[in-house]
Image (cartoon, rainbow, N blue to C red):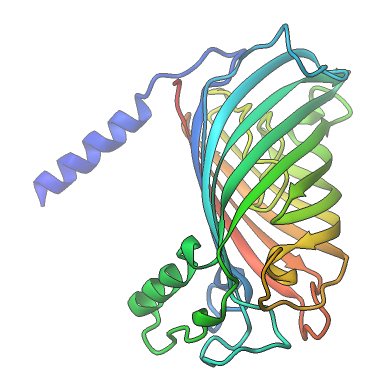
Length: 336
């Protein structure tokens, strides 16, 4: 027992003693984002429905000053930039996962396994308004090679042995995927002093590829204590990835947030079905919206945790209820 206590004390001491970055330049970070429909109701009955689970890992390197760039800065002043990498997996199911037969009136089984590169740059747009751009390219695969079925069955055998998914043989066919993402976000507060407690983050973006084609716009308002100089929490299917901008001081912040997003969808392979092969699909809605709220806290120099609950409007004809899922994110910041 004493050895366990000593090990725990040493681990905590090492974590708190990690090197930090300068006050005018953010260090890199590693983040884990986990989303699940079960996270929307921690104390209610377990469910799997539609967008049922997603996991995304993000590694962003230290920011550096940006003076010369091939892509115009479009009004970004005092710009800094960072590069990073992402790895993720999303899974989608019909509402009844115990039926082994195809369910043509419900969302088909689908998985999306991907990796990608991220390029972010941020700076000042005008007085009391910061701006960030996110460029991202994802490559991966939809279908059995995404291993979404194996992942869900493994988790259920471990946690819900009475509820093993039976219909993954009916999922979309294998298809390589390519997605190009772009997003631009602004962060505004009336004064430098109010920025510690309140800000508004409008955003717009788009995704293009054979997996998704959509344009989106939205806004989030944050209210709290010592708001971090970042651009808010990003869910997995946002055009923007997790962003940096956090500094070592102050060492504690906490805030709540609420937002709304609209999306015009031209294509979603997990609803429409495969691009060049016959497979399951449903008749989707071309316009959907998200309502979100959540809380976030920065604890010490190196850790930020956040939670968001997202209510998504109906995505296909015949869908009975709106979907609700929770998003949990942990961000570990270092000086690499």
